Length: 420
RNA sequence: GUGGGCGUAGCUCAGUUGGUUAGAGCGCCUGGUUGUGGUCCAGGAGGUCGGGGGUUCGAAUCCCCUCGUUCACCCCA
Image (cartoon, rainbow, N blue to C red; front, side, top):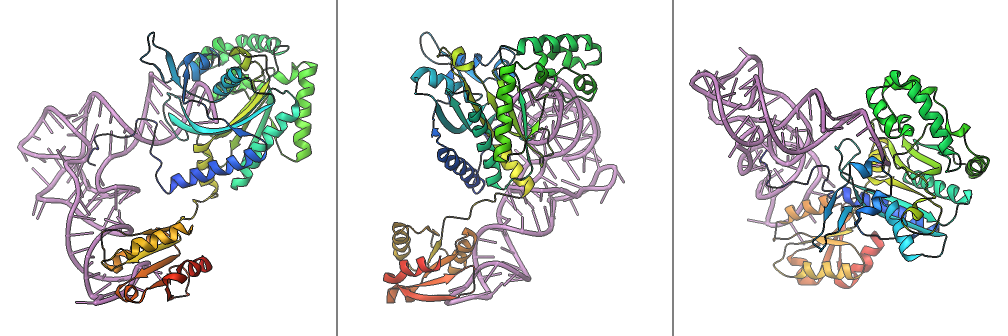
């Protein structure tokens, strides 16, 4: 293969049509559902002060080793980073603008993590998500989770499992962490070397290990649910009860821990069972009641989720749902005269709100018809010398069997509106 | 950061134990059909075999390095 001079950087890719229109449709579908649920769109910068993301936690890989960071040209230079996720940006924006709670926002856009790419994992990836700041009512948790669940359903995905857990809060998690750490340390010789390293950094994360040799130790480890304070347990129960009431099925996953350290209480993940690759989490989220405060804002509870656009589309492929939308072009104009007639007809159709395209370069009718067919347009508007002379246009059905007939220029728009 | 697989036309891939001007299907262009696509037929364009070095009379084929890609670990969407 002739090596191109440049290519998209590692872990990034060009999304070309028609795949790009499928992503656009997915994001639009999410936007509709989120706004119907009372969320407004927040558009925050693609990069932030590095400090914003450092607040996510010192044992968070996303922060410690996966950041795209750089210095700007200021004096002194500011240390910036491409956003590795959006919850921190939203919390920063909340602390900065102090909107009236509860503040419900949704977002969409690229995020960046410096990782080894693999199936369903890119250095630039895209997420859609929501955040609600300023309320710790368990019904907010339910509303949030249900929104995500319904979104997957609306795409046609049927093999998504909702995993649910509570990670406790400052009143009860420390006691659990102590118990977990003592247990794991006592059984360290039966853990993989990698998990032994993880244990020193963050014992919770050991529960996430996929290595076979760790599974026996993990299976017998103490569980957070047994350590929840009365208040936290009650909150968790209210969330479960709300999900039961609205009929969203879930699976309690007592070992579900998530990679971002800020999570408290409710945490959840959406797993796509149709994906056979290792990265089958198509979405995840939870409460982060201390994050706004950590960013210098008022003590504010928060909950949200992020859904991975790239992985959702992989899951849709695996389930054979959510096809690429049909082409927007309804009429393909074929003009074999040496005039500007095709140009004018195309413009007339577009002005009337009818999607229209045409061929360039004065190609033969056969060649233009071929392009018309390929365009996906259901109709062709043909202009030859005869039509030009009589002021008419031949409208041909490219998909059905209604044949073709001539209409005057004046009748063209009405005729086409009747046919499409 | 660690480990494995793979890099031959735009795409999917063949290329026999290293041996003449490197092939197929699809796609693309032109024509058969001087006004008609989707079927069919005939032509055509398109490749320094990822890059560099080495072994050899001779390398797409063997060896080394490198880049890319892919899968997995770590971690996450």
